[in-house]
Image (cartoon, rainbow, N blue to C red; front, top):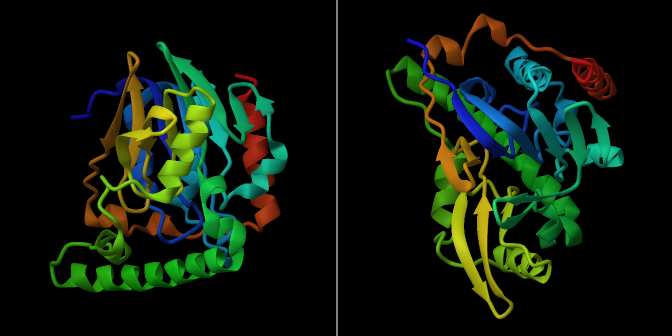
Length: 284
């Protein structure tokens, strides 16, 4: 029996990292098909241009793009906020194609709350002061993802369950979510200087919903997480914001299926084809 589609005012997802083995595109596709939002915000690092040179783009990843186009055709306002891994799109800032737009940040008034949405990399000191270290980390992350995929294949043979190594490692070395990080403090102070009530970002891959108090005042901070480890989204219904952790039970044959053959365009061809699809959708 097909589950009822949930109607939302706004859904915000980030850090999908399409074009990498870490991306859980099939889970995301199920989530997108399960919701009917008025506004869908893609909050950065949706297509990973840092890793795109590896020519890895399975059909499941392409289906996510096509689902987004279908949502645009059906009247959903889709806003693409650029992140550091898809910063190639920043040259298209303020581009509008029908219901689809590309921006670097977004401000909305929801109810009586001023809400500020952006990816968050601008507040990451490593990105700005040691970009080589950030890219090295991304490469190491990619290597670990490949190893993890092979490990899960072996686990399935012996009847075991999949595990995410990098999630386990991050959970062990990450600070307790209740502890305020420098990243969160910088964002909170920036938001308060703009008289913002709620700030929503991504980038860290760690879903969080907390109230931050600084010398400047009080602001609510939501990190919508990612679709690599947590399958989380920030959702708004009738003015009420919450974090939703999507539970998607995929059968083994769905996780590894013949449809997973690669779709391998070059980088420029991929971006052109995406824009062409979006232009077509803008006429509906």
